[in-house]
Image (cartoon, rainbow, N blue to C red; front, side):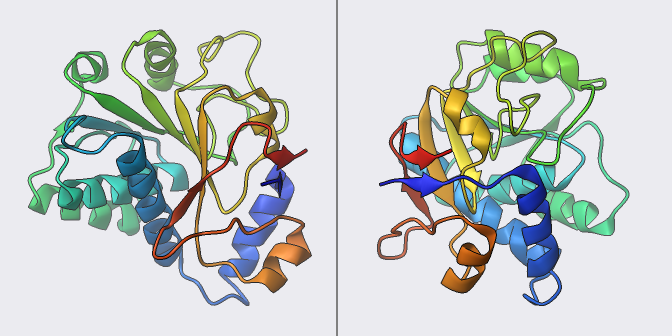
Length: 236
């Protein structure tokens, strides 16, 4: 299987089109993304093996995907906890948090301590739109992810990575290469530097849209929302 990658500008333009002429709402896109993340987690390690999953959420859409994933993980039988230190003022994030609180999913402010009590971590801090400096409190969080022996699943991009150029040469993300990555809709160019298990998720885009933006829809099976793509299975 060989898939074309989707650059940052094209990914942003695709999102805009999906929410305009595509008639998708941001809620729908987050729901579909979060469901894909939770299915990738289940494929990696079911709740019988890794029940305690810590979901680290940033303030943007990537964090929203993580909040949705935490809800699905609860229903899948996991015991998720959520680190969400910089909640957006957008009411969508307040609703996603409320849904988790109603399920008694705990929120933590002690990231390092919670990592030590977890079997797996989901990195939903920064996605394809990240650029510039990593700001507090996330430098210490990303360093902890890089140094931890607890396996990590990154959502769309390992946090602090450059979408086009991959792993940073210095800063908190230096040496950070998580165990698994789920690319949403299509792989991004950074997969060239990624070393772990790679999934693609987001089963809702038409073939016409995929061709317009120059990426491929992977061969999803049955009701699956994710496909595992072997390393080197992307056209850069």
